Image 1: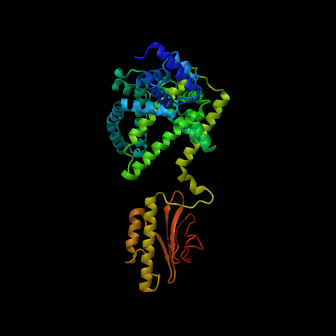
Image 2: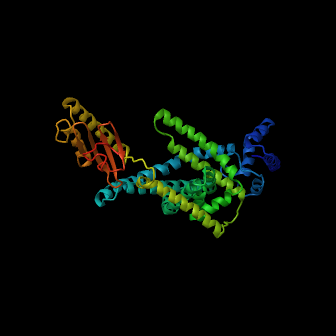
Image 3: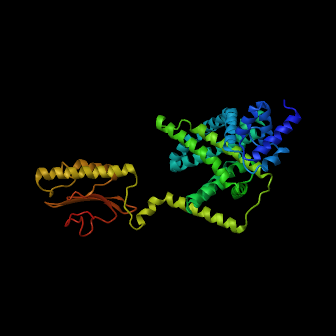
Length: 435
């Protein structure tokens, strides 16, 4: 146990070195070299930066805030790794327990879908959103209790109950964060990244300060203001490193087997960074922006919503845009249609080689009936076939709602088109050309 005089000397020395820009690792290495005990050095650092989490509410907190900068990446990583090892079991327990509890509701969505005719994808998406929110809220509550040095009193049941009560408020914040980031991306990549960094701590603020909705986003921006570059610099390398780990996992194992651990690590890292930021800024009250600023951000959120909406319904909009090149509804349908018409084209040419005429080709022809039955089975009807001794064309409407057709002819053409092939001058029985 370090005595008070040595503690004061070491505290002042470390504070002075930090203010001069030296990082924690270098300072510790130098002190060890001149004979200081590692336990004593760690105790002083603990009072400056606060155990593995954050500065204590002590006289040293003011010194921390006056150090002109946030703790570096090395400090963040050291504390994150320490916390990760300490409470990994607890967080994994929360994660797995929620997934286990929610499984029956996943199966229930299948039953409801079948009984009520509600699209399963819709119900499944809602279920995933709720479970994802419940997991993240509960993990944050667990982290907060550890940060408050209350690990011995952590009760999983209490955490899950509190998490359940904040599912919708957490989901709303995530939606707002997504919309404002996407809206920012409309202004460019850099504005989108800036907006995300400004508002990224909103979920933590909901849990630790009980501030929700847009106010949580504004509170996050208030804390980050003036330190945007510092936050970006501390977060980007970690994401790059974990991204490389994910890539390696996918490359060698075909799946990201470490996804849960990476998710938990990032969550802890961001929470430690948030606590550093909050204590660096001190106990500043929430300051809401002016009405003009609020309207500006609401406009950005609206733009983000519109962009996501347009992206979601793009398949319905594209056919009405100038220069649209028609596509089938899905890769599977696209492949089926192309394959069916290709087979039809081959069968027709075989008949021509055998009979030296196209004139008798229709779905009743023994060599064509197989291809026609495929169309009947998958598309509910036979294609339209027009022939003459020297020419033929075949077409079918494949997406009635958007007026798309697929057409083949004796010239070897095989393509989709938005023009009606049966109109005069094309595949009308007089002429035999696809539009």
